[in-house]
Image (cartoon, rainbow, N blue to C red; front, top):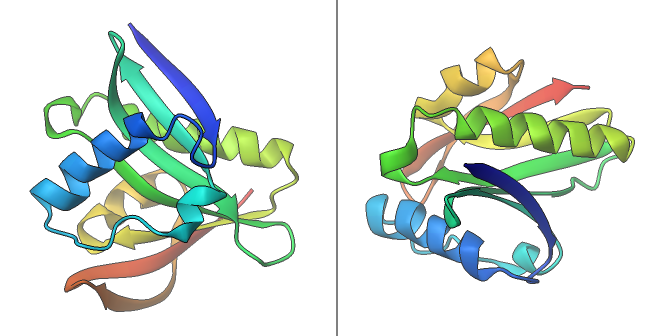
Length: 141
């Protein structure tokens, strides 16, 4: 059984940390996944049978009615089970309730088709983050 829970800031941050460390740190080799935005962002964690298997964070983008989704991660053994899609939809619904008109995210280039299927469009040039190609994507809500 799965459960989705939102947490504010670093409240109950350990489950997010575990998933992000496994995906971004160990698997992908990123060294700078954690930052000061974790202190104020809202974090979503998906639990399967009580264990964290996916996470993402969201926060205001600094633009009027704009929000940002980031650090979307699903542990390797649980990919292709729809958790990424469920998280994005849950965050979109939550942000729409806060008055969001536009949601942005920085997608790793290989994940671009995933986000396009969810209605996001490329909104910037490809850039490197720790050597990994990313692209800004956005969706009007």
